[in-house]
Length: 602
Image (cartoon, rainbow, N blue to C red; front, side, top):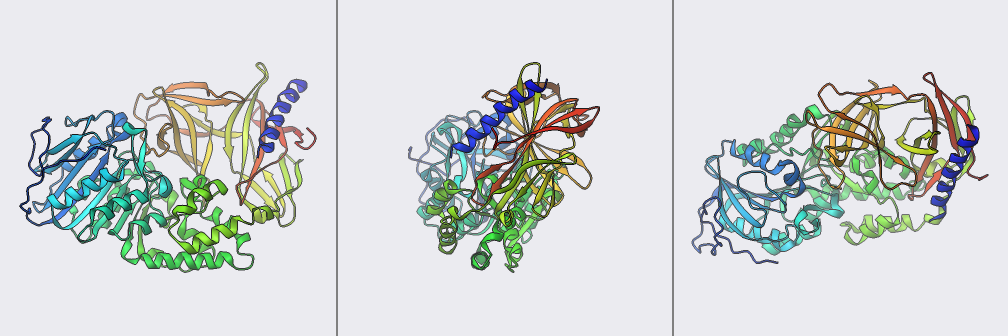
């Protein structure tokens, strides 16, 4: 058996060493209502100026997979129709960007515009299909909406997926997933030549609450509503929004209603930023840059980023702005500008993300669109010192008691940004190795670190999951787990609380939607657990079960067998460093390390 294990381990070692060695359409719209289902072309807007209303809400609803697959846009429209809307309030919607609409006879082969009137959805126009991810499409809608429905205050909701400041929002699945970048949104609003600022711009989309987003749209609106993290598929509470437009406590109610709508899922963030005070945020960033630039300040950055790794976006370079500043002792005033509503696992979130590139590739994508010259200059200087990174091991891995341990050289710990260990299961009968995921349970004594693998893992529906770390903050670690949901590739999202030692299911995201919202598992959904076999591009189906409310996440001991684990350290410049590989055998619920294979000797 030992020779078989060695054979498999040497293949794994070879793979690791290989990794280490590879360094439109023109719109003609009208204010006049068109009966539902009509395909008549719209005529130009009447020259007679409509009366001034109290408030107008423009909703740019790019349905995408959220509507095609789950009918999320239709559900939000129903919420609006169930609201008691003030006669002096206009709610106007433009639909597009979805292969199929699930209700109200909304066409997928055209752009359509609707008005919410007396609990009914009334069509006010339609035109040829156009890309909802293009500047002109948004500009035409906003310009038409502000002219056709003038009001004391006008607001805009961008409804769809979101991918953060760099990727933007409103991914049109009919046009190869093209999206509106934040720069394109700003260009569209510039083109509109608004007579006055919008009351608010809301991103009912994931990951759009960023410092750069706030700066970019601040010339066009007084407030920004957005989420730092993944949003749930149900989105905001549109009944509350529709009933409270123009009210003094509007923003408090919107944030609170989002928490109430998704509170049972245990994973959410939403914030409202006062864009009229954007200079306070700029000053906070400049103070933080100054602190990071001081003597030894740069060496504290990895720990600062670890402290700010609160939201799902850290792998894309997004960290919590307030947490970074707080780590350096900077009094920012962010809480005076940004109001938040967060789940218990996200309580530390300040309401805005800051992009700190994970590597030079992300740096080169970000620098041309960075909205702050002081921060841009700092990043250029910081990454120019890449060659000065001095992370290295003193001992790459040995057994200390029952744990895989490793020691770093003096001072090298300052260069560590992230640590996790990978776990795999060895199938001796088939000479195979299956990746089971990652975890972050380490102990430390000075320069020595210990992988605290005890043989326990996360189970769902009675089966072990392939777990991948998303974020860790305080007592909460959020994981992804690849599965099939009713035959579609997806990832479960769950949160582990180290205080209670319990895990809570938050939902799932469809794998094809890189900016996807969190969906909710339904009774009788078919769940297939996936594991990846080394050197295979196709995940292996490990187990299948039917979901019910009785299915629970559990922490259990893995079955008897051979398991392999290894620590992976990511330095401040995104480089990965690997320890030696430990082989552990679990027998009768107890895990014991049998051997440690050296990378240096292979």
